[in-house]
Amino acid sequence: MSTLSRRSLLVAGTAGVLGTVAGCGGSRPGTGGSGAAPSGVTASTGPSGTISVSPSVSPSAGLPVPKAWQPSSIDIQPAVKLRAVRLIEALGSWPEGGQGQGAARQRAAAAGYDPALAAQAAALLGPSPRAALQVLEAQYGGILSDSASVLVVCRQWTDDTGGYAGGAVAVGGTTVDVRLSRAQPQWRVTALQPAQPGPAVSGLSAPAHAVLASDAITLPPAALADVRSGNVHDSALEAMLTLARAHRIELSVVRSGHPIDVFGTSRPSDHPKGRAFDVWRIDGHAVVDPSTPHALVDGFMRAAAAAGSYNVGGPRQLSGGTGNQFFSDDTHHDHVHVGFAT
Image (tube, rainbow, N blue to C red):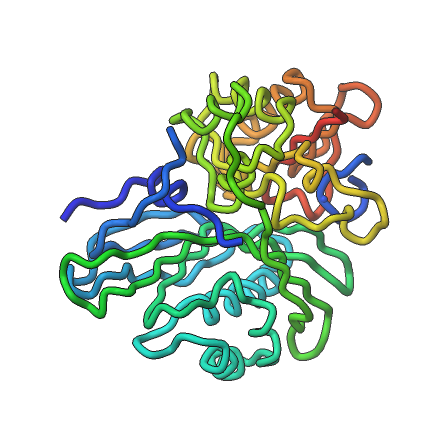
């Protein structure tokens, strides 16, 4: 049984459905093919959210066995991210016969969450008798003293085979904007907002086709569907291609699944306009991993500015640039935001 490549884990399938303030940049913020993952693989995440896979289940079982996602040792308030992630993991995976909203309510309650949240997770719930979900990355859409947005990027496998060999396992996934508020003894999840990328269209631009074909650009399900929808501006797509000439880049969020406004403000974010993207891993190094060289991330941020971004956010405040071209805050400690005015 062969292992599943990192790119095919992150790109396979289609989707189901941050400045100085804590929100990700607004105006201040291959093919990517679909297909089933091989049966008998385990997807696991390391301390910085890195993904690896290995055989672990029998072919007749049909679904991989995901490992629980873990935050980085230098994450800002890692317990907040974990609070968001554990709910998505509970809702999106179920054993035989665990389909439906009623069973999802029970899983949420058993994990210590308001069971009513299951009604907001339709993108993760379906009629399949079994499902497995792997969180690929969890980044902040915004973090304030008393509220937060955690963008949980996930892949989901559903099994309609009944465990019989030869049946198909469907591969999908989405990004969920999980909203939380401070409470004791732990933060409380208040809302789930799954991505809504829209349907794929014909007649995509040349940059969109090039991004989808690039082996140096990894797109998770919702971001992949964003590009296929034709709703991502060529300015952002061309910058992806420019950056991919020198780096292998793994995106977390493009358009859908991101807060409409810069978190904590009423200013529109560039993401829902299709004019921004976030990168969580560069050349195999997670931005939030403490072992990732600062020079790599800082150099990438400068390259993004040179590629035309007016609004580049990351884990450190860089000097230079035009006006407020570079910014840093707690929200952007775990990714690089690349935004465009047009």
